[in-house]
Length: 417
Ligand code: PLP
Image 1 (cartoon, helix red, strand yellow):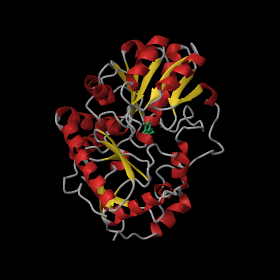
Image 2 (cartoon, protein in one colour; image 1 turned 60 degrees about the horizontal axis):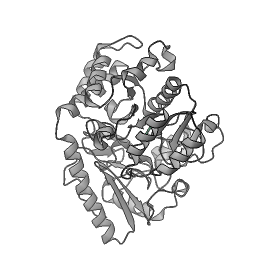
Image 3 (cartoon, rainbow, N blue to C red; image 1 turned 60 degrees about the vertical axis):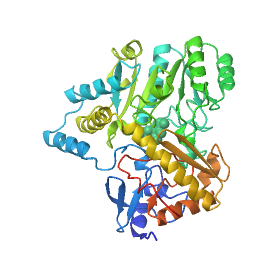
Image 4 (spheres, rainbow, N blue to C red; image 1 turned 180 degrees about the vertical axis):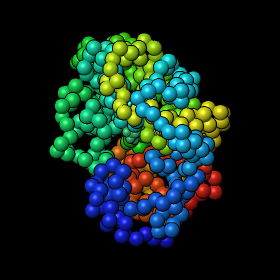
């Protein structure tokens, strides 16, 4: 049985307010005391209380090859010893850009920033600037980070992260942000008709990972592509989750659909803070005459983060089988989860695309954010603690996509509760 003390949590609460990644957030929905990770190596987390956990979430996705992955660690240590300089060109930034451009379809230039949030915010800003139009379409339940561009209240998915109807969440951009229903092309068409010549871009998670790995229905992404082409709208794929995970070229490659602007985060940083947005020359060249603050900050493209990202992408690029292996392992886990849940008579729906998988409980197929935010999904709570007691860590919220790492052995993927 998994045991942990609450002293560290009490101490943390005194100095760290609630919010994403804070210890308070981490166990908000499931109750109990959060886990304080001391070390992470390969497929395992080691906590301050001396427990070892098999990790089925890999820090929400970046550590796709496992924690403390040797080539990444080595690259960062070597770079740190040589010192870093910010705001000046470095060869390592060009190297990661060249490699990313070679791996991902339909992009010529890429801009390195510090997070997925920045990448999505910058992509929308670029779309608005390039098209000269203000409105955007986003999908309810898709999450594109915590910038003001997306912190509108209705349907932003924000309540997922514990801030439903929060005061202080800006409404400034809400009027320009049109909310569409995921997988509903007619709904998108109607919004475009009602806002003719005003829409700069449609931004979408090509697999809706923030409402639990909902795949696009057949023809949906192509339908969006066609609508964008017909109405001079840019299609933005937020590939923060899917990029360098579903395939070498991400969702664009997997679904064989080209977006106009693509956003990256998570895997591209190898565990350090890196985000990126990318497009063809004609769109990216719009940025060339514009000042740095329009598109980057002090630490953007910093060599330490670039070293981690470059080592990660180099490995993924060189290992032709890695995405297939990840998918096979996830498919194996899929069978295992279904078996365990069925044996325990737990009503569930499993969604999986490649190596992204999610479990919805009690017959929910698309998550109800408010229910989840209140943390009253009792079935999930029981399951979560069952998993913990079995020595497996999954995300402490029912709607979260699970990301496994290549460091997990098939034995690690077997569990019982
Ligand atoms: N877009 C998607 C699809 C995400 O899943 C996330 C984070 O989970 C973001 C954007 C924001 O990225 P970050 O947390 O690196 O700012």
